[in-house]
Each structure stands twice: as structure tokens, then as C-alpha cells.
Image (cartoon, rainbow, N blue to C red; front, top):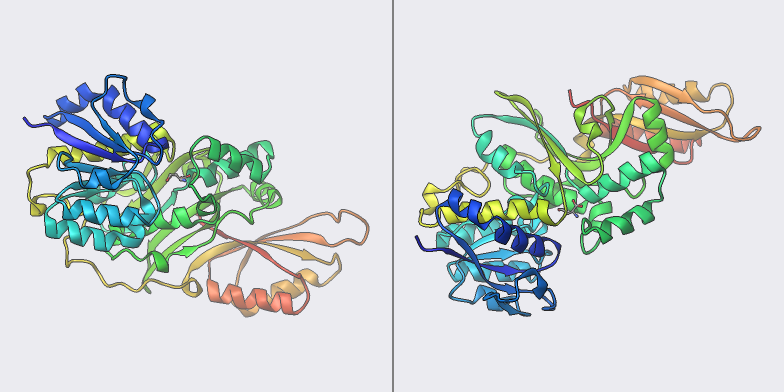
Length: 436
Ligand code: HSE
């Protein structure tokens, strides 16, 4: 049977890993797919990565990615450049040229997925993106195909390896935020612009994709509430531990009576939950289906070969369905074109979560009563309180509160009153999810 000819765009961490895995496991992959997969062309900004390929390679190398999308010998274009542009233009051109596309680019899919999938449908080619979410975990396939019989109610995931690596090192070793971030960059985990990792944008891209697959809604990155980990302090990490919780950067998508919540933010999770014990660069996604109940998917969320594992699986999928028509393939986001649901996506005012709060208050009688009164006015129920010893005689103290679930607009109103009454200048707040 005719081999499938691959063109790689990008030979960095993931591109290099993909070439290595494809070559190393070529025999097994061919036995699984029923035809061989051959890299015929590769492009990188600077061609000094030739060592990836053996000296006698026949792979054509160039410094211009357009050579790959315009090469008539390429059947599948693998986009591993990242970013919105020129990735979007290159992918659209590859589709126009009748090529299948495999990408690890979550930013591209979250922002331009609708346009790209529509173009691919029109042309009858596949666009696969397993590596875009949670690195090596086959979460797209699991949700889109393995859970196709379920109504998915909610999902929650640790979907940024860099952020999880930073939070883990801060907790375990008391390491400095910037120092750990530098290590994540050196290990090839972090995005080109690491603010995408620490400010939650990367996780928001991934959550947008997961929510679309879960609920059959269009990709709506702009409606995903996004908060990063850059303001998480070691103080809060320690207090959370004292209360029996871990702080994780979590992406949550939930179907409620009022609409859909799509949010990424630091979150306290009970330490006894499996997902609270997912450490380092590992990712995990917990998906709750009405038939199956809770399911948990765990694995490396970043890095060369774990991400390559997902890219190569997509290439294998394309190779298997090479001659199938679009109607005979799994729809890109799991629902057939025209079957997307028009469900309201909630703004943060309507989110409902419990809260961890840290106030900085005077150590005098009545302070706690005043806070409790303001919270009671908003119907907020307090679950636990810890007051820390003053550092020096008469200095302010940290007052830590855990609340029960409350609508976010009520919490906003209560905290505005606490600040206006000069009880605490500012209040640190972190949402709490019990994931029960
Ligand atoms: N920067 C991403 C992460 C890479 O740290 O998870 C994988 O998408």
C-alpha cells in the first residue's frame, strides 16, 4: 500500500521529538496502521537540527515552512510552529492544497478552529489536534470517541505542565517562582512566551477545546474566564495545606441550569483527591459523564516525546482513514457540523464556588464578628476560620476563611464591603472545588 508522506513544520522540542518517535517506532506504527509513514520534508527557522535525521537522510530540509505546505509530495502537514500566525495561514494553505493537517497548536485551534475545520470539511481533509491538550494524554480521543455515549456534566483538569511544575516546586521545596520558571523553559515545557503559562492563557486555550468537545458548543476562547498563578504566594500554599487542601491551577467546564461555566484559575482541592496529587509537569483531566460517572486521565502534559506520542497517534489516524470521506470520519470537535448547541456561557458573576479567603486584619475584639456580619448579609456561610498569631506585638494578623459555595457576585459584594469598612486593605481569594 502507498506510504503516507509527512512534512514537518518546526523542528524544535516537539518537532524533534516527533521525528525521533516516528523513526524509532516506524515498524510498529506500520504494523498498526497498515501502511508506512515517511517524513519527506521538514522546515525549521534554522536548519542546524539536521542531527535529528541520520546522515544519509533523504528528507528535504528547508528554512521556509511554505515549502512544506506547497510540496506536492507531502500528504500530511504537521504544524509544530505554534502561535496564531503564520500558523493559521500555513494550515489554511495546506488544506487548500488538499493536505491533511496534524497540529499541536492549542492557540490556533482555540482561536481559529472553527474556520480551520470548516475549510477542512469543504476540502474533505482531516485536521487532528490531540497534542494540543494535555500533551501525551489522549484526552481528545477519550472524550470525543470513548465517552460518545455520555452526556458530559463537568470536567476539571490540570492542563498546564509548566504551572503545575512551578506550584509543585514551590510547595515541596519552597523554591522561588522565577527560578522554577527558568528551569521549565530550559526543559522545553514552557511556551515561547511564558506568560501564556503563568497567566493561564495556555490553559484557557486547552479548556476552550475541551468544553467544545464536552458540550458540543462552538469554540469560544474569548468567553473563558482566565486567571493565572502569578499571584499565588507560598503563604497561601502553606495555609491551604494546613486546611487539608492543595493549590492547583485548574481548568473547569461545567454545565449548570443557567448555562456553561468555562474558567481557569488557581483552585484549592482537597488533598485526598487523586487529582490534587498530580505533581510536576504531569497533567490530569477528570471528566464526569452521566453514564460512566467520574473518569480520570493522567500523563505527561509537556515535553518532547510525550507530546510527540500524541502527534504521531494523529498521523497514524490520518494514515488509517486516508481514503475515507469526511462523513466517515469522526467530526473534529465530536459533533457533526450544524449540530453545535447554542448554550449561554456564563460570566464570572454567575459562577458558583466555595472560597478560600485571606484577610489582613487588626487583632482586636469584634473584627471577626464584623466580617461574619457582612458575609451573613450576602447569605455567605463560613465553613472554617483560622487566625494566625501576630508576628510582632500589635501587628496585623492573617485571618483565613473557608466559605461554602456562593454565587460570585455575592462574594464580590461582600469583599467590597470588607474593603470599604477598612477591615482588610485587600483580600486574597482563591476558589475551592471539592470535585466530589
Ligand atoms: N506550555 C505547555 C505546558 C506545553 O506547560 O503545559 C504543553 O502544551
